[in-house]
Amino acid sequence: MKIINESGLDLTEIEGLLKDFYPYAQDTLQFDQTPTIKFVSDPENSANVLGKTAYYDPNSQEVAVFVDNRHPKDILRSISHELVHHRQNCQGKFTEMPNLGEGYAQENEFLREMEKEAYLEGNMCFRDWEDGYKQKLQENRGNEMKNLTEEQIRSIIREKLRSFLTEDQDFFKEGKEVIKESKLLNPKTKEEPKEPKGAKKDFLEGIYINKSQEVAKKFTKKFIKK
Image (tube, rainbow, N blue to C red; front, side, top):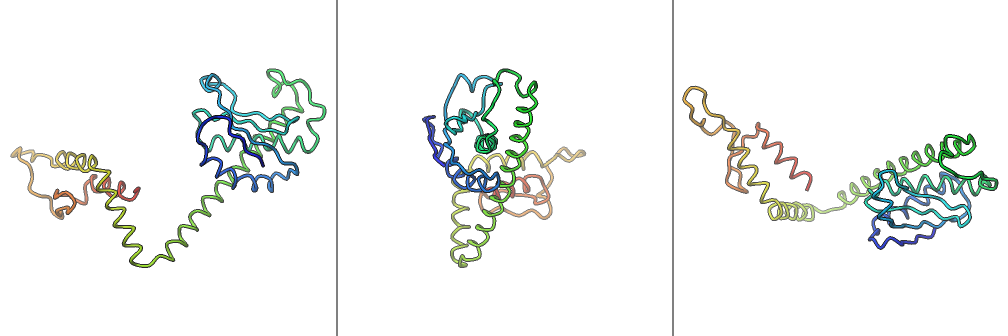
């Protein structure tokens, strides 16, 4: 596979994923000739809600993918679709192609079947690779954690906590406001209730957090995401 980036954008992450996806797609779709994958930019096309996402040139065996303002997964999915057309070309199905005018997928039964094949097999090929790739990442992370010493784990936790404290000062301020608002006035005396039972002083900010309140859940979710 040859990758050409003509877009002027940094697509390092997508190219890295493509290098893992391509061998899987070649093995799954079973094509025996090497295509060129070209990333292109077209601001005018990207501004069109119904603009093109990608196309395949059977003469040059080139897949061109428009990359402006698109999610990486969407770009890879388009490549998977066009690789099915590449396989069709390798099978000789493009030898006697009729004219590709507007509505060809609705008016020409042969081309309609070609598109059905590309949509079904292209999407499923990408989906199967994606699920396998995610599982592989999880297994690798699990193996890495198993090999860590106790001191290395503690170091990671300390670094996470340091990053959390440095980057999320606004979150603590927000947490204070949520706690303040959660202390509802006593309906009879109109006074703030005493410190809720089971609360403890949080060492990070010196604020009281009732672990049964929503702010505790919010705090936990925020920390886990880090």
